[in-house]
Image 1: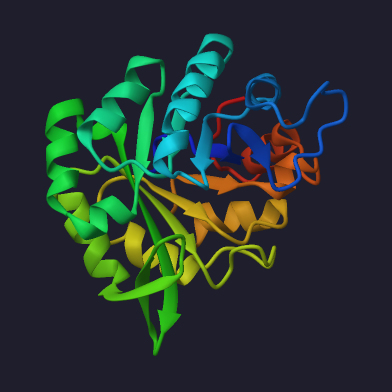
Image 2 (image 1 turned 180 degrees about the horizontal axis):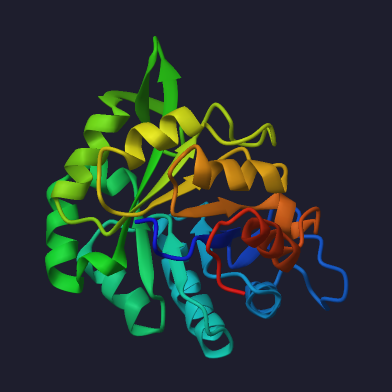
Length: 253
């Protein structure tokens, strides 16, 4: 996948229709408003935006659809939404209001056929499967329910199965590195990216520009996803892209 531009993706956690986990944008009237935050990232040069509905219980599902609709009117980069997507109707309702891709995790593990069904119905390009992986005795297992429950399933095997079932992309989060800002798990990233031929989004551990470069050069990732380093302006997206370009990594500027 080397010839494609590498993508930089800010991730926003949404709870009850509000962006949470400390989005600290100066100059925003309301840093909790997903539309404001998404517009800001659109203007700052992000390639895509990912929204994760972190309390995706059923009552709130309508809220996120309404938010996606508002965001899609204002933002012109691809939008991915994840959290609580369990059936084809959930995907349809999000795509209908302007979401570009959906991310599925628990539903895919509980019912792998859901991957095939959704890819057939909406096209692989719309279907991202999120994998939360944690190292256990020298290999990686995938976890359910926001990383609370070990499934005992091997992450590399699962990535291959997800690919064969028609997923268009994998959002790969290292639970060991997530939140540490000590760098991505590039051993995990490379193990997955070298075993399948769909894009891998590296997630969990970004702290510096060099970490993001390493996700591409050492981890073989096609995109890097991060939250707090962008929210708190620890790293400016355009500065990051210029840094990557200077290091011979293809990016859209």
